[in-house]
Amino acid sequence: MNDSAADSAAEFARRGFCVVENVLTAAELALLRREADALRSQTSVQDLCGENCVLEALPSGMPDGSAARTSWDAYLARRATAPADREVLQNLLRKLAGVLRATLSTDSVYLFNEHFVVKPPGAGRFAWHTDAAHQLEAVLALGGDAGDALAEYASAWIALDDVDASNGQLLLLPWDAPQPPGARPLEPAGAAALSWLESTEAAAHVVRPTARA
Image (cartoon, rainbow, N blue to C red; front, top):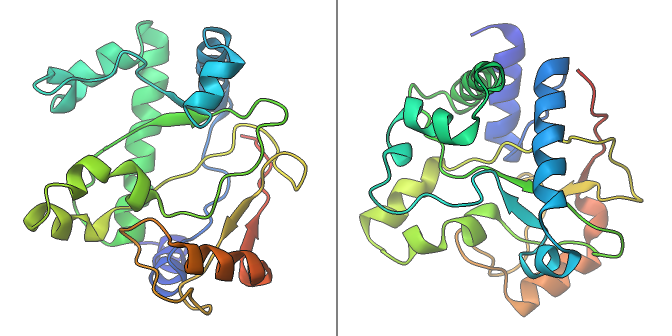
């Protein structure tokens, strides 16, 4: 592990997140932007808002038993049809997996979900939440060992546009900052926790990335 990776791992362990800069190549950024624009062009504003501004990278989904759930090649074949795009995507996913392995200090990383967040004008802000509480509901519903296995769940958020206060900057509450009363990472925040978060937003870490290769 190099010094940069070690610093990211230490920051993640201490704060619950880390910021890794200059990850994307120009080709990778261009591909993701094209995909997001194509999905947006196929979706009305009403439908987009109905899906909480989330567009799945595989809009047809992956039903249980799909080979794309367990096979790297099958996933890439469904995810990108053009061979050139598939090569770019493959390199990007392998690179992100390497970043996560180093950050989490683990040998194995599995892709659970991949989607674009596309906010039309006037869509408003996302409420405070943890991804685990919203993205993993089906797994959490199984309880027992399935819930225990989520301890190493992590999200990788990549800005495809320059981000600032006017268009959706990311606010993160560090683990080493005061925490809302009664909140649990694997459960949606209750009214008391949400009220506390809104009143103490100054404790949040603001992420304002510039989307560049």
